[in-house]
Amino acid sequence: MTHDHFDSLRLELRRGCVPLAVLAELGRERYGYTLRKSLAEKGMAVDEGTLYPLLRRLEAQGLLTSEWREEESRPRRFYSLSSEGRRILDRLTAEWIALNESLTGILKELNDGAH
Image 1 (cartoon, helix red, strand yellow):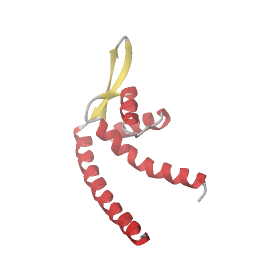
Image 2: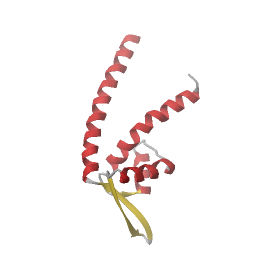
Image 3: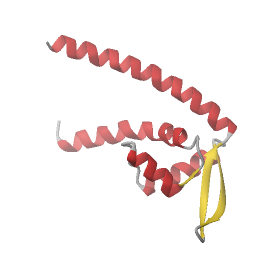
Image 4: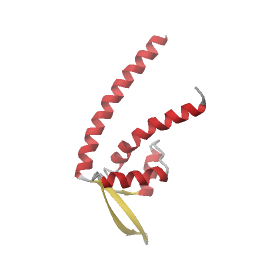
């Protein structure tokens, strides 16, 4: 597999994880920059061109709420989970755990068979 194939598949894999990471981080109110920074510090770097459209989409779906506030003499949009967002986060977390357990088992079988 070429490097381009790996990068494409890696991007696809990460793309599916970003909404869950964003919802989890917004269990605590944040504005965009602090959200990006927190995600990056935890190994989930997300560029602005991905994050802000995702935040708008999640808000349009009723999973987030936002409000503009003046902070440090600059207007900033703060995001937090709505009650529906919290319910969806709980369900997605359970789904992630189940998927992770399944994939871990599949990969363990692969590794055990290789030895």
